[in-house]
Length: 337
Image (cartoon, rainbow, N blue to C red):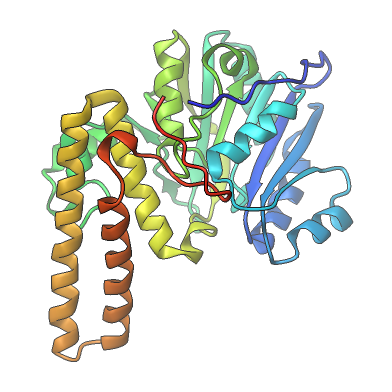
């Protein structure tokens, strides 16, 4: 796994470095940055935006409206983990707060997260409570998945999953208003201790997007650190504002990342079986969409979906199970460590 070293020394007065990866989401980034200003409270912090080749005027607007932001610009989309690693490599804070641009930080949530981490020296990662725009709680804490989880979660078969499988995975057997140690937290908002990154290394850049935080938390826990869900800090997460722009890439990246994760932790046979299953379920979906289109039901939408699913199948077929990775903007393929 390529490692981008943490090159900047920690500054004793710098509490936290907020790192935001952006790609064509200026509409959401602007209120996010405004909320971050307020959420720092009494902390001394810095804001780093890593832009993955946006074409919506993000760069010019950030420079004009948020001159205090340290802006890194990529000539092509490097993916979520690689861009976060770029931000961490130049950060000065005791903590790194990785934050999606389609979020709005409530009250003094960042200050609360840092205070919680300061009181628990073995807390390596802390995730806040994420809220949907309507104020309901968004699922953000997880247990590590089993093979059965992978067969049902975020596939066509999810509605038919035995209730215990996804209930266990989504930690639905524990109250969402209580502080608790968990296996991993979703990467939309996560506070990570600097020493953890120095010991364990940054995110695995073989993931383009999705599953990178699950892999990271697994490595962090294996090194003896704790991962916490801290619901007293709250952040609104709108969700998917970048990835929804390219649905075929979104589907393919998600499934490739799922296979990569299972290759790393469950072995090549499991990863190969999972790939075959995923290809099969996309073929099933193509058949269902084709049948509905033949009956004249929303034919344009059905054809669009078939095109997306065909792209995903081609992508999965062209990727060997022992080399699941993503292609970054420069075309270089990063294989497994």
